Length: 313
Image 1 (cartoon, rainbow, N blue to C red):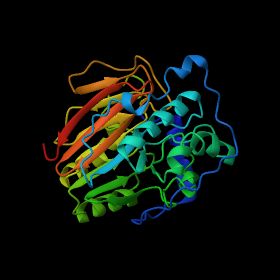
Image 2 (tube, helix red, strand yellow):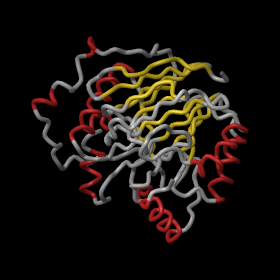
Image 3 (cartoon, helix red, strand yellow):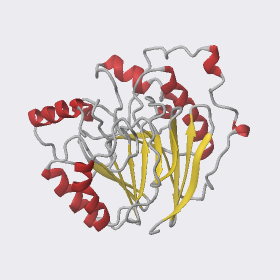
Image 4 (cartoon, helix red, strand yellow):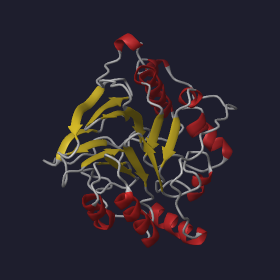
């Protein structure tokens, strides 16, 4: 079911007008560094990254593979977000991922310059300084004007970009209007990429108690995913981690706990392959040939899920 925040976001889009989407790769971030990060208590020090020799890396790191990280519902500005960011940088130094996809709710509580600094530029400063790009999708707590900020959205609500033989489609699930649907179908149909990955905020399938699945959105876009061979889908919104059993051959992930957390939020379901609802987490992903390798990592550095998935299985 849609939230009240989503309703107001739809009203905002109607006021702004529908914006056409670009297929060009957005412009890199230009981070500011004018504020201090929130303090980390002595109790929190134990959850900061271990040395490289202690990191439990599960990815094979094939030459010329596509490597990226995934975060969702991250932009709180709290210490947990900063700790996840530190873990991300520790893994980046080993993995060498060069971009991050964001699953929405990127900036909670306002979109002033101060909020962007505290909730994006400062926590991810080491990643930004290393040249890592962030490709965002909008969540129900995001102001649609965030598309104009250099979150690598290129000014668009929805857009596509390609890395080697992997095509990414960032969607705006707050307002799935006919123009976006038409754009999505055309881009999926025209893409000849070996891998097609879609990401957006509201999950089509979800066993969380708080929000649940967005059935209306599912009825609009799941048939397109199935018709045009989408391989994997990433969503946020529910403040937990879930990996579902494939649905019509598509791998579905929910990752909405990179900043926010809803503990004990999971319903028991045979549709769930793996789940985690007791701390924050992020993902690292590597795609090489017909295989997608992934590892989901908690704030304390614990690997909570990992596997290798085969394209077309």
